[in-house]
Length: 113
Image (cartoon, rainbow, N blue to C red; front, side, top):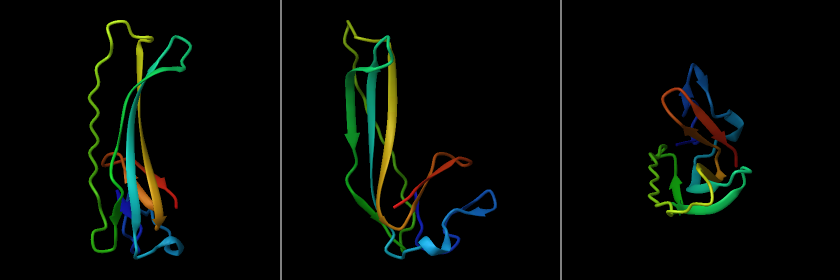
């Protein structure tokens, strides 16, 4: 993750992802949550297998980046209510700066204030 604390702070594909008017040297206060749900035949959640949330963390002008690793290890019962597991990750940005979340070297997601 990269906070929008400086101009051109997050460049990718020849584009600056942080708008000049949204920059804030205070950076971003962030947390993340990973969750695994078991889905029934109708596609709805029939069981929550587990969830993990990181502690709140500040990414400021001096730090600028945060590498985030989430791990969730869960067992499925012998008689599960469904056969599809959906894993989702959610990033919360409390601001004040916007946050750029990089999925890989070529993909990213922008999370506003």
